[in-house]
Length: 222
Image 1 (spheres, rainbow, N blue to C red):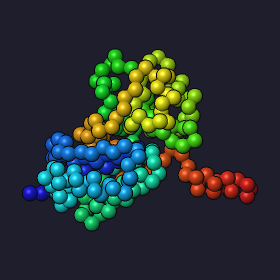
Image 2 (spheres, helix red, strand yellow; image 1 turned 90 degrees about the vertical axis):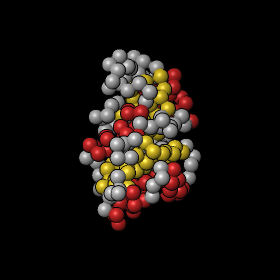
Image 3 (cartoon, helix red, strand yellow; image 1 turned 135 degrees about the horizontal axis):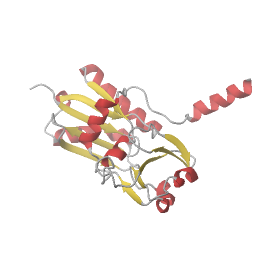
């Protein structure tokens, strides 16, 4: 039988792994909280494959989260995906880390016109947040006050997990959706295939500390 399974990986916030069959049915999945060790990714994938009654040669493609999110998590997930894909000639597809938030919240806004606006949020550093206001929005980096202003009118907020950094935001929004193990894996896989995003370049919305420092040095040098 030809390989026909899809593997989904994401370490942008916490960890998510899923194995889908040829019809995008979910055979197995794992969700890990943001405190989980990313270096256990290989074990999570093997557990999912065993649970699905499959092994690595049964994979046809890999969909991997490319950011924004944890610099370390993104690099680990993408390197793992490439390490599996390159020797086997597997297809790889990237997806924005905002996509699972927009696609997996309990009331899909694209199916319910009366649903409130939804804001997808991923914690960054120094009291800032990566924010996307829809599937077509690539996102931007906002501070706390700017993010809270988006809650006007009863907008809902969707997050990957109820981490402490988000506690102060709850009162500014009409509703909070925490997307943990309740990912819509099939919708994410379809989005990844159609996104046109590669799986070899992280989607960063902010400079790393090293890049910021290099930029400051360049400015002073002028």
